[in-house]
Image 1 (cartoon, rainbow, N blue to C red):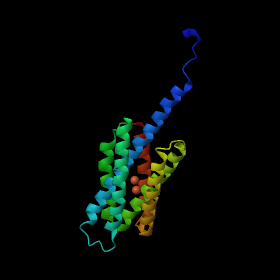
Image 2 (image 1 turned 180 degrees about the vertical axis):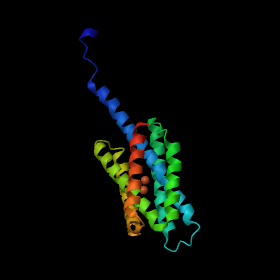
Image 3 (image 1 turned 60 degrees about the horizontal axis):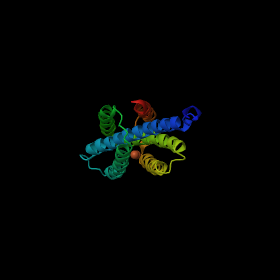
Image 4 (image 1 turned 30 degrees about the vertical axis):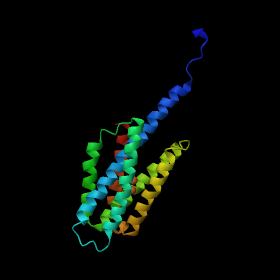
Length: 189
Ligand SMILES: [Fe+2]
Ligand SMILES: [Fe+2]
C-alpha cells in the first residue's frame, strides 16, 4: 500500500525554504530597527546639551519614537514566530551608538546626513522586501507602513540640511556601505 503512495509534495520543501527566507528578513529588520533606535537616542543625548534653537531635538524625538514602535513590532513578531535575533546584535548596538554620537558631535547637518544615508538604505531594503512579500497579507502592510515612515525621516533630514554637511558624499557613502554590510551579515547570522 505504501508503495503506491505519492512522494511528499514539493511544497513541504518550499514551505521550509520560505520560512527561512522570511526568518532572515525579519531578523535583519529587527536588527535594523534596534540600530535605528540607538542612533537617534545617542544623537538626542548630544543635542540635549545644546540650545537646540533649530528644533533638531523635536525632529529626532519624532524619528526615535517611530523607530521604537518599529522595533517593538519586530520584537513581537520574532517571539510569535519563534525566530531568534541575529547574534550580531551585541555588536550592532554599540556600533549604532558610536555612529549616532559621532555624527551628532560633528554637528546638526552631519546628524541629518546620517539619517538620510541610513534611511535611504532601509527604504530600498524594505521596498525589496515588499516585492518578496507580495503574497503575504500579514507582513507586507507592516513593511509598507514602516518604509513610508523611513522615507519621511529621510525627507526631513534632507530638508534640514543633510546634504550641506561637511564631506557629505563621503560621509554618506561610508554610512551606506556600513549599513549594507550589516544587512548582509545579519541575514545569515
Ligand atoms: Fe524604522
Ligand atoms: Fe527610520
